[in-house]
Image (cartoon, rainbow, N blue to C red; front, side, top):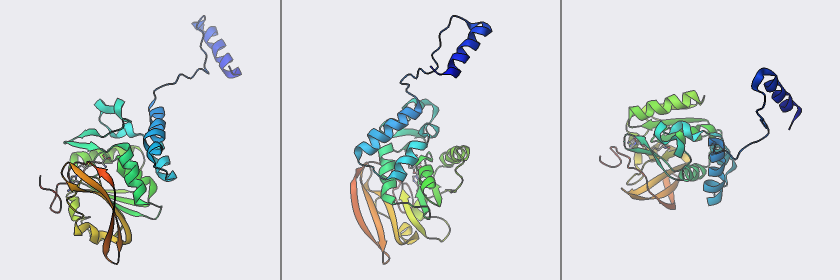
Length: 243
Ligand code: SAH
């Protein structure tokens, strides 16, 4: 017990709370969000081969519980996706880590994200790149994400409500593109907005079962590689799935 704690106990006794013994140094193995976050990084990310220091530190710092609805807060660090409303889900932490790692971000990257959802992946991208442009189909979800990112002081993000399968509504190029919902194939609209040497990461395949694809743009064409099998909600749009 430290001197200051002894003094605090004495003060308590002096103030009439005598008889209660409080050991201020006692730290129970609490199930705090911080402890759960630490466990998530160690077991679900590092334990499965996510090794990129920036990704691990961003996910160790970001309060995932801020991005899930109140009813699911106690499960915020569960090893799986969770409902966020409008029939959509916040992705499993491991998948967020894996996709972010595959993007190979740096402080100079300008990133397009299709499928803002809860804004959790958006926040991780924002902390690891220069600026993020994110598109969401549902204004309710975009508004929620904007509110959380605002509260967390993350302000290098541009939000747009619309069909992300068409790309960002203004003509521009991005260093990185990520789709957080499944695409039947990577649409030309997104390939066009990817700069030369840029990287795109997206779940590609059928509704209910896809492959996580990483594409690098070389001489105008995508060189693709498959990372693993995944299951995402469908991207609904002109160059994606029909509703
Ligand atoms: N990264 C998000 C995952 C959200 S799920 C998170 O961590 O919370 C995928 C999101 O893509 C959903 O919010 C869904 O509404 C959105 N979406 C589906 N089709 C879209 C489209 N054409 N354009 C933009 N967003 C779309």
